[in-house]
Length: 222
Image (cartoon, rainbow, N blue to C red; front, top):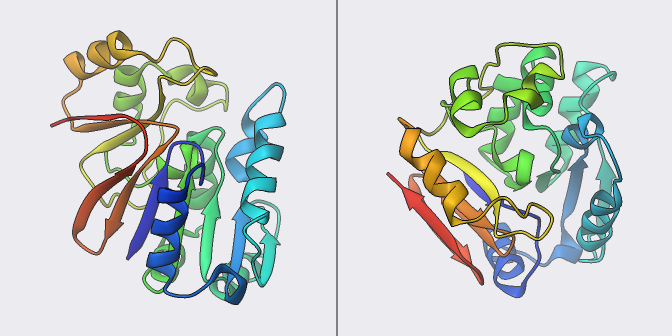
């Protein structure tokens, strides 16, 4: 299983090179499916969404598909995931993305598809793999409001692959509160490991090996 879990998409050469290496062929010979689901639950201006979409499309794929996980027949969703070489899940509300996967009974087949494809997450798309994606971690991290806005008080991790949790946008100008003091406060009360990564960084998972690809800054608190 190959996962490239970014904070804000493929923003630098190191991240793009990492994806190319994981894919094993040029982008122009590969199909990508872009999953915007998390973004639709995020309020406000979506200029960031358009910028990420354009950046990804600009890599020159053989085929660029866009797939919303909600509202389509389940088999259609699975067929289009399986048609892709790369599954790219956009940012937004990670609780909405997780609930869309579990609520549409996609988790097992989605995970099976990932066994032979490369997955790229951006922000929310990178946060759905931890078994510590729970209402408890929402309180610890301080984003329970993003769960409650969905009319929910609980969330189930769709995959539960890792103990560690990923928190994006360290030092981001779009999230000025996410500085070292912010990370220190969360790490001080967390009872699970956390990667804090900036927008130039990704956590890369290849089978059982986990490492970090970065042209920026990141922190890991075990």
